[in-house]
Image 1 (cartoon, one colour):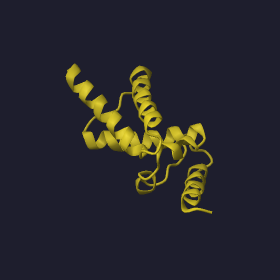
Image 2 (spheres, one colour):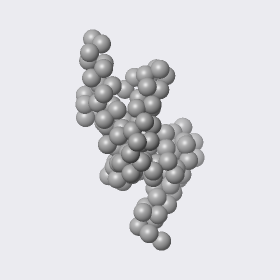
Image 3 (cartoon, rainbow, N blue to C red):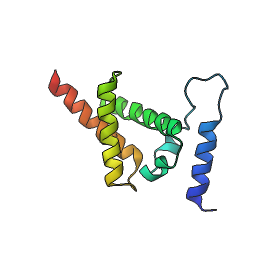
Image 4 (cartoon, helix red, strand yellow):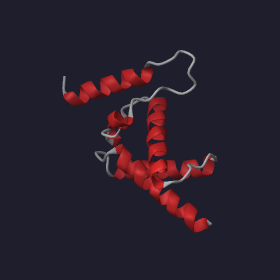
Length: 113
């Protein structure tokens, strides 16, 4: 078993386990998520992929000093940016793609003020 397959299995196990009554899936620590590629994320079940993407987006938003929008239209736009980046560069680090999308969103929000 390769190290990548093993890490994906451990990540899936970490995401699948958690408190039985929890609303959101538990995500592993940031240090484990930062090295996921877009193709690694694509291999995850959709709810785990969304939980990981939201955790990474929250971390990037804190870095850029913004609050992520709660409405669906702006969230959908951010998701389209991430999907486009991962489609173009499937071996890119997911956090890098998400951070760039959040940065663009931050610039757009500052320009709208």
